[in-house]
Length: 244
Ligand code: SF4
Image (cartoon, helix red, strand yellow):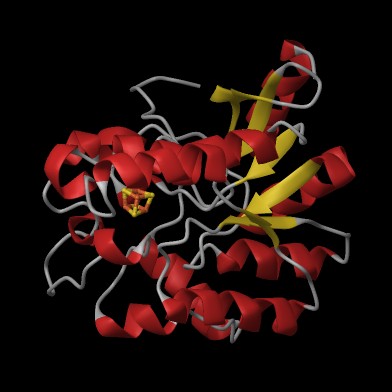
């Protein structure tokens, strides 16, 4: 997609409702766009996609370290929406040498970047290489420091698509608050991950996710041993103030 068309899309969707953003992405890219589903409240994107009546694809990163509850929840989402999630697994040629050299919990010692690189970023890069656009559930209020300027639509700063150009990244929930997301999930009777009911507001891999107390920020439950600016796993690079 040329830059002029991307700019028109950004302008028209800047403050659009999430359902409008999802419908525009699906109708524009068809089979070349997919929803990235983490097994958390980004399930709302699947609900909106189903409401459009258009065909849609969903993929998930099965890192091998997800909670059993998350895996069971994903299966329940498949049943509810009559879909097959495209699971993306780590490449054993990268994972085995890494785990054999450093063990299963090296991230507590030297940070999560290496493990996330093998278990998340590399499989994601493979999957995105088959697409021209993707839909994510990221929101500004998840991390003001790294996502505070997140736009609704952006040329992906990190990943290249099947046509050799930067993917177009749709963030339909960018300016939606956590409270608004949960109001919609409740009102639409969308199934949710039971781990949310145990104080895990942001859900990732089991060893890197913990429950939080009232008053704590949701990201305080992720990679709690690392500083806030490092609480990204490489899937969504930080957006700078004023970035498109
Ligand atoms: S979240 Fe934790 S277990 Fe999962 S890939 Fe990253 S470092 Fe590894």
